[in-house]
Image (tube, rainbow, N blue to C red; front, side):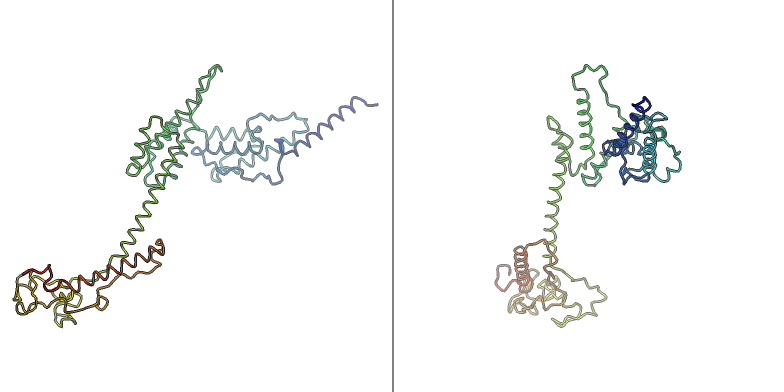
Amino acid sequence: MTTPTDEVSTTTHTSIMDFRRKINDPSSPYYLHNSDFPGLNICGVALRGESNYREWATAMKNAFRAKRKLGFLDGSISQPTPHAHDLEDWFTVHSMLVGWLMSSIDPPLRSNVAFMDNARDLWDDLKIRFDVADAMRMHELKEAIRTCRQAGQSVTIYFGRLKTLWDDYAAYRILPQCKCGKCSCNLDKEFLESVELEKSHEFLMGLDGEIYGVLRSNILSMTTLPALNKIYQMVVQEERHRNVTRTQDTRMDAVAFAMRPSSSISVIKDGDKEKVFCHFCKKNGHDIKHCFKISGNYPDWWYGNKGGCGRGNTPGQGRGRGGPPSLGVHAVKVEDIPGVSTPNINRASMPMLSDTQWNNFLSMLNDSKRSCKTEKLTGPQFEDADWSG
């Protein structure tokens, strides 16, 4: 025969066993994994003070919610009675939460935070100390959003800076809510749409005007402004298009630079003319790089001092004494003249060209060299149309 005492004892034992099974259930708020320890950093954001308290608090709430422990912070899981069988487990969980909170505080600030046994008391104390939601902070964030500019950065980095400011400001902004419970006009939806529209204008106004001015005007001229995400995609596509175009222009500039022949011809000073000697015409006063009998560029004094014809009328055979010889007499190769060089190009210098483009480039370069030899070393012949007189 069972007595009332035995029935109470049986009931208590059953309740304890049920609770033990419950704390081993991962869905229970009392459940602690084997990898959990007080020094675990469950949040990637460290509390540094007033500057990032809102960001830290949001991240910590999300982490506690993921571990089903948020009820210990907001008070929804209250402390059991002094003789309850789950009292010790309740304190165990709170000690773990206190360790997690302290581990998420920046070390220089941690020494100034008072240690508490109750996680909710510590949470409320941090909120009182660092949650300074005054008008001055909101003004600073609003001013930072207004003056935020791209300033040569990529669109992704610029948008990320703006989004961080928007999130900080949203933590201070109180959303209007219906208190009577009878509204059916979707006030909250309309308010969020107005906030989204404001963000779109702020994003567009901060873009670099010289690059995205036309695109910005086209977007603002639309009857219905697209959503912020759509505007961001349009700007990123424009940025990618400009990067591709810039790459193509750079390749063309590299080809043009490689095709440009190098020139090492320098001007000889008057005091040095007596020290140089031309091995082609066997005269002093210039070197072979400046010999006009090779280049065909006769100076003005040649026509004045030499008889036969005036300036602009290069003498032909038997016309005038001492006139410059016909430019077709001397067959001089560019490769044999010191100081007159052609481009030194190899295949590895322009890896952006395909094999077909490389072969075409070499063909054009060879044609240009042959044309340069013919025009500069041969010059117009006797009785050509370019001769006068």
